[in-house]
Image 1 (spheres, rainbow, N blue to C red):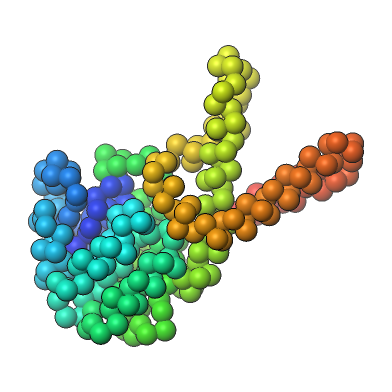
Image 2 (cartoon, rainbow, N blue to C red):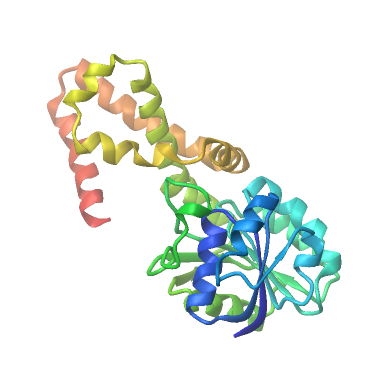
Amino acid sequence: MFNQITVIGIGLLGASLAMGIRRHNIAKTVKLWARRKDTLEDCKMHDWCSVCEEDITKSVVGSNLVVICTPVESIPRILDEIAPFLDDHTIVTDVGSVKGDICERAKAVFKNSTSSFIGSHPMAGSEKSGMKYATDSLFDNKTCVITPNCSNEEKVQNQVEYFWQLMQMDVITVSPQEHDEAVAYFSHLPHLISSSLAKTLYSKPNDWIKVSGNGLRDTTRIAEGDPSLWEQICFMNRKNLIHAIEEVESTIDQVKKSLIENDKDELLSVLNKGSEFRKGL
């Protein structure tokens, strides 16, 4: 589909993306950029890497598609940095889990450019981080959300959709604003709840963990995710996340009140709705 694709940022998602591009023969050449030289040296050892670049501006030259896979906080700055060096009609996308600020910055950066930006959020990942956990099947049968703005041409949008479909993903399209509201509830809030639970248990006696079962492992698994990455995500989507937290606080208060007042029907109502949602997930 593409002559050359550049992947910027070679962590779990970036390396998995490069592996998937090679596996599905989506591009003839895959150029990679990473901040650390030792990461680039590791990449050179793999067949999913065609070219490594230490200079981020050189990494995008000649590419039809550029995918930014760095932490969300750095993406707006990277757009500023690479824009002057893109070839005509290059498509730029990203994998960030917050879209509003990124898409707004892109709108300004690409206002007078022949190149285009469409935000993407592949809902794939792991509590693990780093290239060593990458796999060419990470994106298989997952959902990718793309967030075009009103100025994007239909042809460009179709190309981005098709790229993620070639990566074996189901693609849905929403506005950046709706995306950020939805992920606040269905992605970012679950992570904070998991982390908050793990933090609460952190100071409890070590031998108490012997009474735990798979439930504790299930509910705290995602708390293992990279704290610095999640700090960025939470603050970039803080307005939506605050509303989500307030709603879960209301539910916790409802549970607490039912216990204080010995209201079994109220507690059962909460448990039933939770069970119903989980069974349908």
